[in-house]
Length: 292
Image 1 (cartoon, helix red, strand yellow):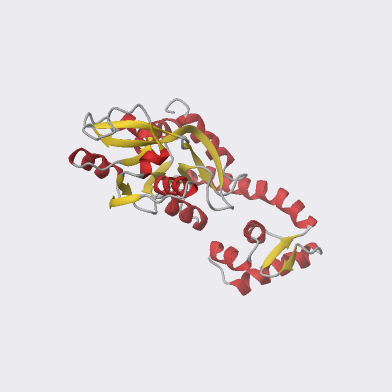
Image 2 (cartoon, helix red, strand yellow):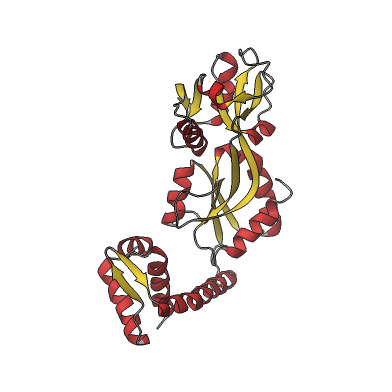
């Protein structure tokens, strides 16, 4: 048994499928299967049982996984610690952020990460929720910041702060005097919305579907700033997370709470490997605590 076989085993254990595990490891399926068979032979135990197209871990596999993950995590930390001695570039951290929370968190996070980890190379990407989860699953991102819960069952989430969806209208809109707007009233309004790949749009459509309605989409833009700049010159409305108002205080816009029902949101860190990424998640939570 070696660390390479352990890494292959952990990927197969977490994916439960040879094809997905092989894709994650950039390895052919026959090569992965051969390595797992060799590992089973070396340990003299069965690690997986096939059920249809899925592989079910045995009790021995559960035991091995609980020991393997800390070992691989320790090996990764050892490599990180030694990179400076070998002249390698510093460890990097790739973070995907929803644009609807970007302006609230990113400036604080960049500054505090540099102070806490000056040798850490941070790469941030503004992405849709679908793309964040896709890149997390593919290993191109380490952490995502978006709405919880994640849609992919293999992903985990931890809340940073609560929010809620609000209606945004121009100051001369017919509903300008309303203190709050019901979901049924909002469903009647012509909308300028983010595209369907954005989680805020998906949540809005899900809420309307629950009352048997569909959004009246008059126009779409793929950037929140463009929507907020366009609304004062139209009679359209939009829906966005309420906290976005803090960094988009356009005096020509009114933000109205939605009611009957409210549409609560949960913004948090999204990640794939709960045990491996525990340290990074806790670091980001502590750095963002004051910002949220």
